[in-house]
Image (cartoon, rainbow, N blue to C red; front, side, top):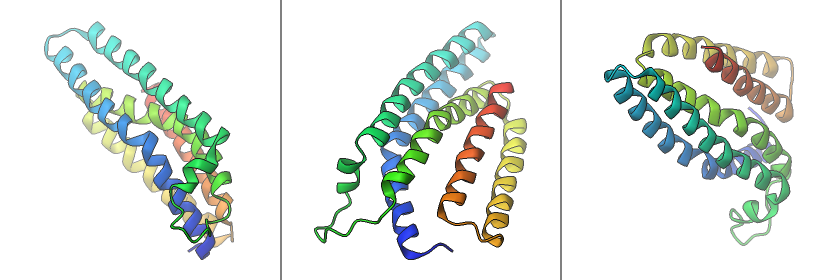
Length: 170
């Protein structure tokens, strides 16, 4: 429900975000597997080591991308130039939001995978339902109040940050 320019900028920013995000999904699957194997062996210390080492790798990866999103958005955005030279305005600003939330989104993906690998599937599912339902409701409220593109992106960034805190405290 945002204007065409905002939608185009959002689409490009989301697609650029995938360069950072997809490898983290693969790493989280490995962490989940290693944690699961450690739990079967009744070795919680190995579960913890796998989680924190995986989280360190994830954060190094995401920090590198966050720096790239802020320091060099132009070359990334140019990947989406179809030759018309009409790239959506605001993509560079949206990539700053991506830079902020990707630092904690790596934490989200890694910690959820570790928790699920340890067998904590019911709690993570229920927490995810509550978190995502709250996020959708918040987005609807922002839209009803006439919030624009940056208000929606701010809400998304806050959602990712709060989710990270939930998983970390669990």
